[in-house]
Amino acid sequence: MMISTKGRYALMIMSYLASHQDEGLVSLKDIAESENIGIKYLEIIISALNKNELVESVRGKNGGYRLKHNAEEYTILDILTVAEGGIAPVACVDESFACENKISCKSHKLWTELDGVISDFLSKKTLADIM
Image 1 (cartoon, one colour):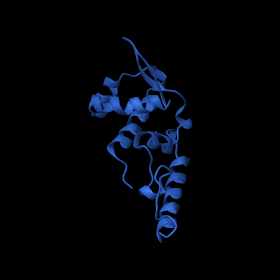
Image 2: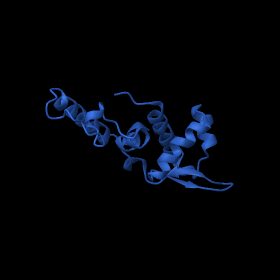
Image 3: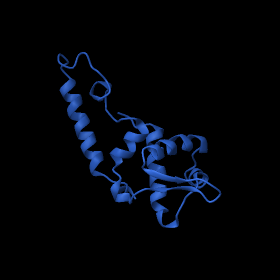
């Protein structure tokens, strides 16, 4: 399993928002400049984070983004799942994938166990832990 730039940038966005939580709203332009990421790519990622209610957006001249909750309430698993659309190490253990060989596949149990280990690890780590 390899986390894409979308997943890494989602963590960067969330970390940036957490570190500026006391300052109120943060503009996407500020995040883009600080993290050296293209604003168009950030717009795609922040849209997914907003749609899944991880961040709150306020429109207008003084608008921007902020975390909806405290950093301790976000698991890394939640953030990566939103950004990546899932984090299964192989497609056959993803809930949305119907594997025809699940019963006869010798390695399916291995992949299922690995998926469990990854999910368990990431669900125990919070945004606050990486701050």
